[in-house]
Length: 335
Image (cartoon, rainbow, N blue to C red; front, side):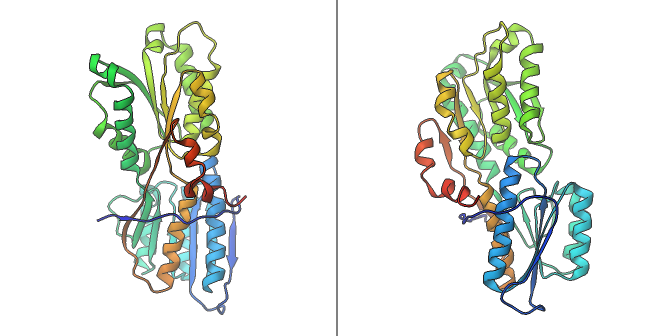
């Protein structure tokens, strides 16, 4: 059974590189390696700051050696794994660029008898020590239910056209997509779907291209847009706001994931333009929970199975209250 793992929080660094450190213990104390992708978009940048801070502060507090590595691509990340395995670290926390592409490298960790905690982008059918991730399936399911309620009147009358903007080909968008379509009404029709690689600029360009190259009937038929991330959501909204063509844009709802300050502060402005938003709390700070599991392994605690971080729905009705809550406060607690 999946465990519900609540968030802790804080923040610090960026850039491709390596940080070595020693806590209060001796140089031969146990060690942890935290390995994750470099910042290709805002969410990853925030996650890196949280992850480096957590690696350092927990290592110092618990008296363990630690190192923190980020990489540009799968090849560089695989080389980092080779290195830490050869060093004989005592536990690895891994956020893969793409889980399945890192399978062989991750298997080296397991074959060496090193406990492995995989975060966020899972490796399918893989025997790691533990996994921790956001509850992507539930995010998708609740997004589908929200769309059902929001468009209930139109759905009762027939087909409702939407667009879908995915992240990449990892397990995260796969789970969000499958969750959405497990609950979304059969009358939703996806006119186009896009893969954005989590890029705001890519999403904005894709949306602009759709608006400027599609025929009038197609553009005016779109009622909702299902996106997989706040960066993507922001790009889509920018394209909608900047459209200056002759067609009527009838988009009423744009969804996303992550609930960052930048979007929440603009909920009212977009609502004045006729566009409501819904997003689901998915904080960069939750990487701290995966790192805490790694340190728990070093402490000799039992760590195993899947840990899911709960989500929270945020829309125009409750975003102000959400910004006063613990999840939001933790996310922005370290600069």
